Length: 476
Image 1 (cartoon, rainbow, N blue to C red):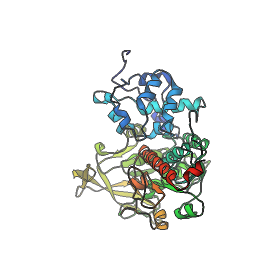
Image 2: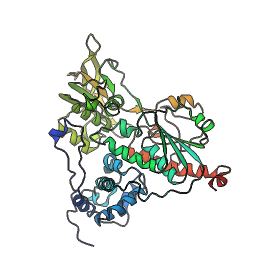
Image 3: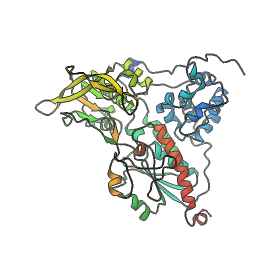
Image 4: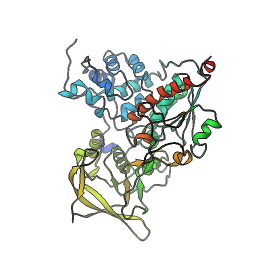
């Protein structure tokens, strides 16, 4: 084996200038050039135990596609990726590889892990530049079976693609006017351009997947009507976690208070970031506070900066070490001038005579004993209150399950939080023919974990459809 060069350090990701990008919705991370991708792929030592594969929820053969990149066989690497992942350009941008495949990389025991996500993004973008979309797709003969997918987020897209490849007739029902779910309404343009999502969704259409937008299941059709009126034999529910949470503090109903879900949707799908071309109804605050410490909070506060905020604060009740947002997103935010206020939490929001936000009262926190998640619980420090002059407040403190499907499907079991109860291995619910996966089952999680749930559910749905009476006759 040739001697490795630069084994210790990951090849840096080129990024747009921080002072320029803070005023722009153009993509921040620019991606590897060919030589950078090859150099990074060559860092992989092709270890025998392949721990990175075990860390991938969609089971990509990581050593194989990385080795192909090192050998400059980019088309082969793309085909290897597409065997398991129908959204490589998306995953290469937003998947938290540092907590999954890269965390288990053998190199990470002593040095930087291989930049698996960065290489994946390079391969997907290279394939697009060469118009290789869909190359290598293998679709089985039609089975005659019909499956409905509720929601076009990462779980739904994965189920749809896998079932289509297995030969089933697949229809996705999406409530909004654009497919992609959280990929289009929840992640900003500067982190995941809409054209990337559209490109990968188009790959599903090439597989024969039908996508019906503006269809709210629970209103347009109920789950039961998908079976009885439209003739579907299996239904997968992947509606995500879109019901916002607000703390029980005074002032949350004032004008200028948003959930992160609403704030990002107005920016992403309603194109507030393209003002004045689109005069979207959203307050373009001068002083904006975002509450939370996850990726959604980071997306929101960086969006506020790009919408013209002079001061954009991130208020988080724990320390930097407990912050769940990706490290690189936190670093990008700090480079752009985001003011991160740690160990602080809001206690009240104050408004003027017109009920518009004027300030937010916060209290200092200290860390106590670990909570159920293993993180140390924040404890208020008596007498440490302070005022923050703001005109916009965005809460990114978690989301729950929308109750619409449950309220119209009374025999579909849910837990006390409203999440659908489904088998972790198969996605099967106790309602015959109904499967579920992603955030609607687990609560808010990652894109790739939702895709993993979709992959497992697709295998179970395929087995279920093929077990139905008359299945062999349909296939013939």
